[in-house]
Image 1 (tube, one colour):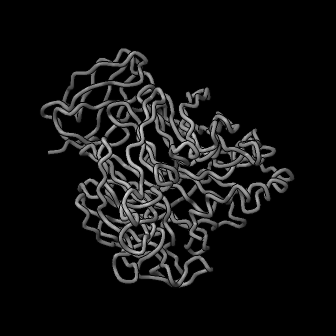
Image 2 (cartoon, helix red, strand yellow):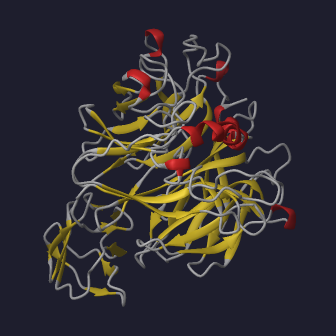
Image 3 (cartoon, rainbow, N blue to C red):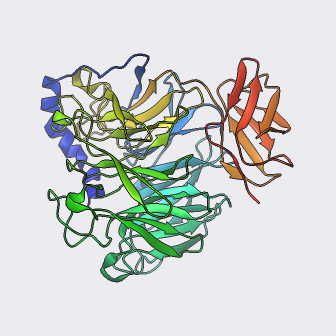
Length: 510
């Protein structure tokens, strides 16, 4: 069974581990000037086991999904204020022909609607792409396996909105080959095109089981596959000879794919194996990501890879005795406003779980890692356990994330007893900033700029070129257009409390 299938089966693991968790509670690895807060513990009807990255919306609130729970135990869409007040917007129901088990990316488009994916459900129980309004009205845009033999893919696990407004994503099964996943494009209206079927090359050297995409500055898309590739050496029983250890690839918007790197190509898999999280492209142009296993200790790595495919393992997890630095990251990284990268590990840390309950970490571009927090540091893991997704940095400077297990509630359905997961925040004293809802656009394109307190703003500039704008009623977003004469660079907003700069440069497209 593949690693992701094991993730879906972790509920039984929690029940086995709870006896251990109740006996041991460790002290958080607290550092100066940081504050960890559990904002919400899911209880089941409001959602359970959050599974994807959160997103800050134009209204200043945080939105996300849970894989289970909700009124019908098919997962839920929720919103939560920075103070922790949670509202369930929608409950999925597979038994009613609805989609089920939302997983992975959740995106707010420029028109204010959110787009996401479900792993199961839909008309053919093979997953779906859906749209949901901020008020909770959901529309299923596409149900996978609509074609005989599922050449359009099954079980989506990645979605990103491209500069042209369309969405691009991946499925981990289906396609025209041995059914090892696809890359697809889908319009906001729901018209889907399959761009590539994996394992379509001999020996699956193009990869198997893709996990999400990121659009590079060159307009192409980059991603990783969990399995496949040219190198299949065995290391600590983590890389099967018959399946390969994963790839890094580039695919053009029209579907031309090139494999740029094969994981486990170094002796003993010290470069890492099984990348299962989306990549990010840093301000320096390189891509950064994590692997679930491999590395010198066999528990995963943080890596940097150039657009041409030159890979460097920056850090090996479990480098410290007892894996106090974390183990097995299933989440992508984010580049924060201080220039460092932040992420989570699913296992490891100094808590009482069988293999550790996971960590939050910071890593510099050169690979110096600091453990910021260890989960299950509170009695009975009320602070959460096993983060399965990455973090988001909100415009107030703080980080927000979720844990798959843990929290103060231990009943997520009428038949099973297990913890339901949490939403948390972590402050490390980084200052406020602004972010553009899309990081690129042409002159004249409508753009939203998100912030925490934008009321009274007097100026908006794109790399020094002034733009006309309006501020919304809550002071959390600015509507503007890319001004004539604008060039690629920092967006700045002047407010009564000071000048706020964008966290990444805005790219002005030709």
